[in-house]
Length: 385
Image (tube, rainbow, N blue to C red):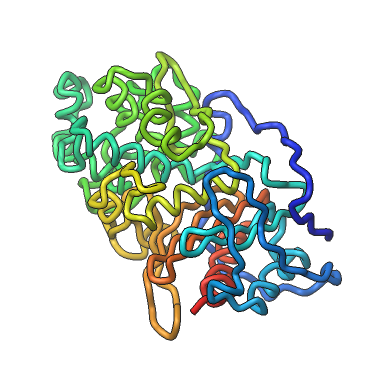
């Protein structure tokens, strides 16, 4: 397998799909124990190069001057070259606010737009935090205080009155809607085929009391994106562009839009790997980017704190649309938070190491998530002191 180091800058076509078409696929299955890989080829010798300065907001640096162990980094790149992590497309490492490592694989390069799949949820988490900072809505509000006319309609369950906005963001609403599965078993796919997305969500029965059980459910976040649009007077994509994407210098994303202009925010965006790193760095900087406040420090702390029963999110813990996991670093255990998406997209953030790592992939391997987490913990986080 030949690795392509950043030399050319051709744009690959952006993956697109009609509303709901990807909903079946945007499902990170529970991480599995990865089997011991068997080398099948000899890697191209890895020669470290400082990433090029593309004047896109990222200063670049030499990882050897930032406390990086080149042997571990080489092991990580060689693991990808040997196809031990199948379908990998990029590996980027940022430390102390600098891009230190930028490697692309399988035809990708710095101009490639990578489908974020469920990493889109963490983007929405940030947009929500901005909306809360602006007083549009709050995690402490009751969901049906936002939509009071829905109370008392046919099929009303009194437990719905206790659902908070925070429950929606932590996937503990109790609604009978599970996005794991394919076809009719996938709640998000069912919603995508409906002619009234909001009505579909409002009609869902309760499966649990609010706040008790974590269930993978992102499609119902459309209630929140719709309310932000109504309250702000802007279409949701316009609001997100003005308040998050433009400040970070990221091109406008293609949010999935459904009937009546309602936007899905659980999947659908496609970003360059360097732009994915900007989201991680924003959180590492406590909501600041290039010296300017984008989202409050309070939101960064709240979004990356535990809001569901520990270990219930595919064996991870869960904040507000961010995954949380304990990992080893410098002979101690630290909490890493990360965005996670189907086929192997991830943005890992370690405040203790002042480090962000982006990986993208187009992997058919159900164990890709576990393998990437192990690669990050052992060879990336473990490379820095």
